[in-house]
Length: 351
Image (tube, rainbow, N blue to C red):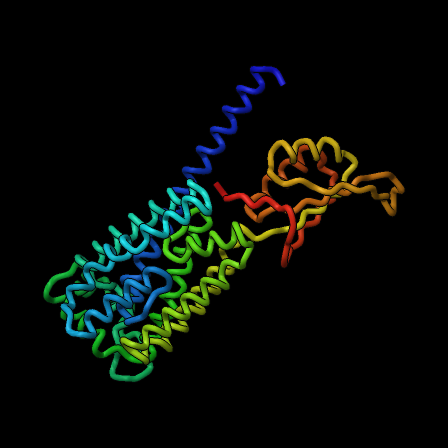
């Protein structure tokens, strides 16, 4: 390559990294907002414990209240989450990547601010949407049109709305709590998945889980589920009844995470082509992964071909396909899931 071509190539790579970083920051920011809303407006309202550091913080706050502490301690939940995340960020910086750590810091700061602001200045809108009736099934007592037209809808915390939220918590039915657990698991799962898909995390045990994925190739959700389950069982110190609903919340959360977050799933790509040399050179120039190449013969055409076998991560697949299609639009490509991989395989982060 000439100097001009190298310079142009470097400029294009920088533009690509900048685009990726912008998308990552947006994804992590939106995910953090969704996650914080789910924690304050759904999980805290239902009396459920979240997972990870957020759950540990909720557990500490709950124990303080249980043993005679002020109810006002709830307002410091966001600050406690931020403080407990600090030592774990060192693991993210050293064990995963600097970009991952920076994006996780953005998420933690947003969560800390939002959870603090939401707890201090708002009540959950779900006290209006899921207002319980005299029945025990927790059915909705008003339609959305009624809620927004009767001038009673107000999420700003004041004496009246605080009393309304307290009344809601005291009179909450089993059906409403179950609904809050399901919606809470769904919302926090989507928020967490958006952060992870952006290349960061919501902090806490997500950092450890990502470290295990990158360095030990352990399934992300397995460690996450085990640790969250321990935290949830520990919450029985505060309320045994809440544990059952929180387990429902955890199952929904994990299902959402498994469905949406497949960024670091390892896949096997098999490329059958007559332009193996060109494809090989471009793939080696673009990616960290090596490959295996062997001969093949077309069963119908009887023409000599090559098979390129390479292992990559889910987030890399679109770029692989673009390169293959650009060089050989007639190439036959098969992509399959890989359960386990061992040996000299380099796993990189999304950004």
